Image 1 (tube, rainbow, N blue to C red):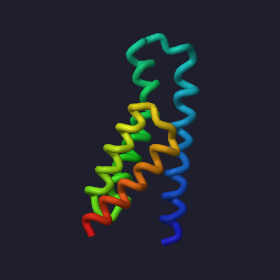
Image 2 (tube, helix red, strand yellow; image 1 turned 90 degrees about the vertical axis):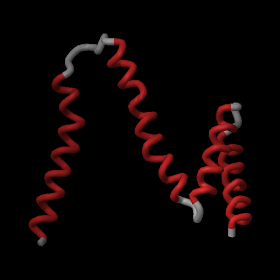
Image 3 (cartoon, rainbow, N blue to C red; image 1 turned 120 degrees about the vertical axis):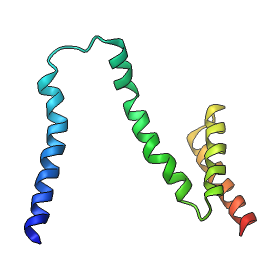
Image 4 (tube, one colour; image 1 turned 135 degrees about the vertical axis):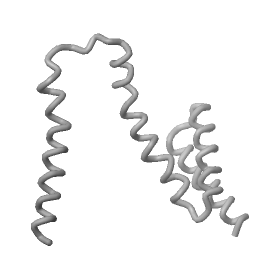
Length: 102
């Protein structure tokens, strides 16, 4: 059983290393394709969104409270509110919705 664990850790380390090193080795000049550059620009934002949005809904007792907090957070951020204000309003929204539902 211990051999499998070390094997899995080794494979994981090699794959992680390869993902980081291969672009440095294979791409030797600046990328000039506008479409590909645009794609690479938005990859971190998409990755963050994919990890964050499901956690927002699942972090509360009721998915309805999470969805309400998500909607309020998006609206406040869209209107230009500060991060602390958005976070505080989302927490209050979850508190109110869960108090009403329970």
